[in-house]
Structures are given as C-alpha cells and as structure tokens.
Amino acid sequence: MSLLAATAAALLLVSGPGPGGSSTGDAARLAATGGFLLGNAHRCGVGTDRVVRTGQLIRELIAAAAQDEDDRQTATERFAKFFMATAVPDKGEGKLVASCELVTSEFQKLEAHRVVTAGAKPEQETKKAIGSTNLPKFRLGDGE
Image (tube, rainbow, N blue to C red; front, side, top):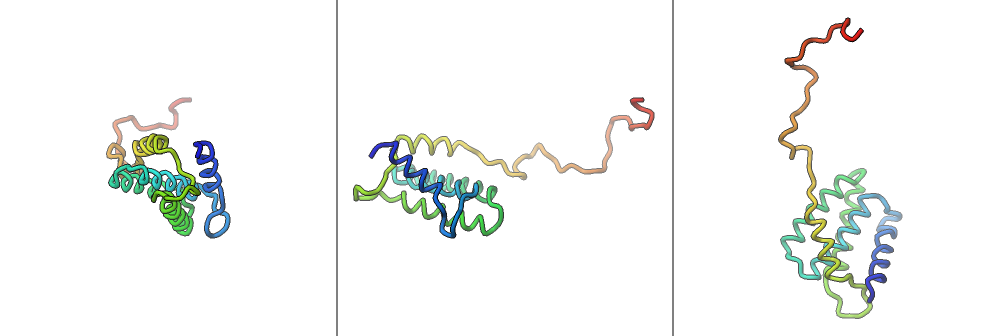
C-alpha cells in the first residue's frame, strides 16, 4: 500500500462525521489525528510508556480544545476508536497501514511538544489591582 493511499484514507477518516453526526470541531480533529498516530505508534513498536505519556498530552489538548463537557467526551470516544482501529496489526491485506518510519518521525515531533498550563509558570504571579509601587504617583497635571 502506498503512503499516498494511506494518507488519503487517514484524511477521509479524520474529516468524516463522528459517532453522533457531524463532529468536525477542533477537539474531534485532535482526537482522530492523535488516536491514529498513537495507535500506529503502538503498532510500530514505540514503547508503551511513551505512548501513554503522549496520550496524556493529547488528552490535555482535547480538553483545552473542547467547547464543553459533551464535546470533550465525544472527542475522547473518537480518540479511543481511532487508537483501537490502528493499534493492532491486521493480518489481512484489506487494512490501510501507515509507514512506521513516518509514524515514528511524527510521533517524536508530538512527543517533544509540551503543554504549558496556567499553574506551570512559576515566574508569573497573580496580578492584583491594589498594591504598592516604587514609581511616583500619577498626577492630573502630568503630561499636559
């Protein structure tokens, strides 16, 4: 199977409607693409701990992209379906299979991505509307 045919089939799956009708939001696209990539990474022999860590990253991205709890749940189910469909090698010739070289390369790119949450930046403090400063006070006549 050519890489072009496998890529075209993957794009059709990702852009196709989800389980409850048309599911084309960002969370759904992240879920489908992430499930496809992680499932193929598992099939290609990428370590389980690496797949699990990257799966957590995708879960965080889905949660950030989801519009509400229902959208997040639908996207998570979509992720699981794509993962299960691609994670186990198929003995038959009827299944489209992505190149392990390409999958591993794309997986490494995603694995290097880091999600920065609001609490993860220690240099940022909560800004307050009141407080003291060493700057001189603003006077109405300043700048006129």
